[in-house]
Length: 85
Image 1 (cartoon, rainbow, N blue to C red):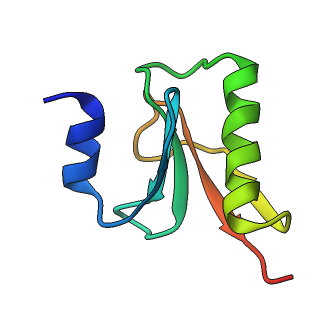
Image 2: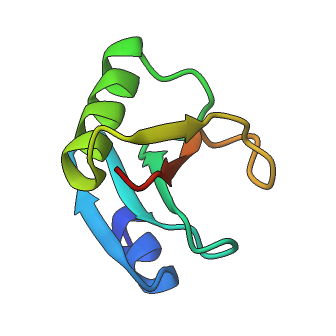
């Protein structure tokens, strides 16, 4: 099973799957999150910027990003906090 198939089986709502990352609902807090598909905690800055850009396309410019990785500190991700415009 490929990692993306594994993630699809675990989560209830996928927003987008990109070649470098996925945006999906967090299984714990049900807030959208962006997850780098590679294992590790130091993605290239270009990938992080692509993740943020796609999040803004999906949820609007009034989003902020919670960058602290709490439950899975060994796999780069961040939560996308949507604020009403």
